[in-house]
Every structure is written in C-alpha cells, then in structure tokens.
Image (tube, rainbow, N blue to C red; front, side, top):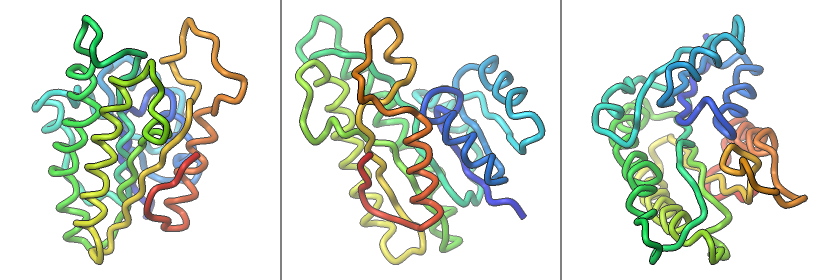
Length: 213
C-alpha cells in the first residue's frame, strides 16, 4: 500500500517539486491549493501518478474544513505568501501574510495532527525560512511571520514528543519560485528541486528538528 503525503501550496515552487519527488517514489499525493485550474493542470502533468486534489483557500475557515482529516503518513505545510516589505510600510503586509503563513498552519495542524498522534506514527514537515537567522531588512513583514511559524513549530515539536510523530522544520534560503518573477535572482539561489530533495531525505530517514538548506 502506497504511503500518503498531504502537501499545501502544492501547485507551485517547492510544493510542486515535493509532489513530483514523492510521486516519483510512488507515494499517494493529496495536493492542496487555491486554484482549481492549477490543480487540474498538475494532475494532467503527473499522468498516471496517484494524486488527489483539494481546492481550498487555507486563509479561510472554509478552506481548512475542505481538507479531510485522514491518517496521512506525512503532512507537509508549505503554503505561504511572500513579497518584500516592511512592518511600517503603508500597506499592512504582516496582517495579510499572517493569515496564510501563520494562522492557516495553526488551524490546519489542529485539524490534522490529532489523527497522526492517535495512530502513533507520521511526520509533520514545515517549510520555514533561513530569513529567521539574519532578518533581511527589506523582508521584515514576511520574516516576522516565519518567526511566528518557527515558534509554532517548536510548540508542535514539544507536544509531539514521544508520540511516534516526527516533526521537522525545513528552512531553505532564497529559492527560485514565482515570487521572484520580474526580479533578478542571486546567482546562488536554490532551486525548488533542491529543497524537495531535502524534504524527501528528512522523511525517508526520519530526521526531526530544524534542517537548513
């Protein structure tokens, strides 16, 4: 029987690369994203790979409820929003980012983790950011939400201790995703596939804690 991974933000960037990596290893994929057309295109791209899709805006209560609380082998919390910006900017970017980057992950873990803890096995993988290590000046609104997510992760890790469920925070540096559209990326930028390979390795080897990329 195939193992089963749920991936949020699955149609783009790191999420899509992770879906491809796990599908290549014959895992069943539940792909969660906001846009039905993107999910359908993903299913067609994956061909005969076993993939189910969930259309859900996780920033809403309705979106959280659309995700079934099944006994997944892995829950990968990847969905996030990003753009450069300051906390004291005219637009309140933190408030907008917080809805998806923090609150949605909190709500989704409350919905999904009890089943993993009850079965006494599984793996929670959270995509964080290396930005929390050095606080880039032009990214304070985004990084503040990733600090909050890192704090949530530490709580999840503590509460899952001795439950049989592994908790891992994968923290990549700058990664070439759609958020870089229209900008010149640094020469050493990570590819989504590089991050996906690290996610695969921590799941395969049962590695917990914080892993930087």
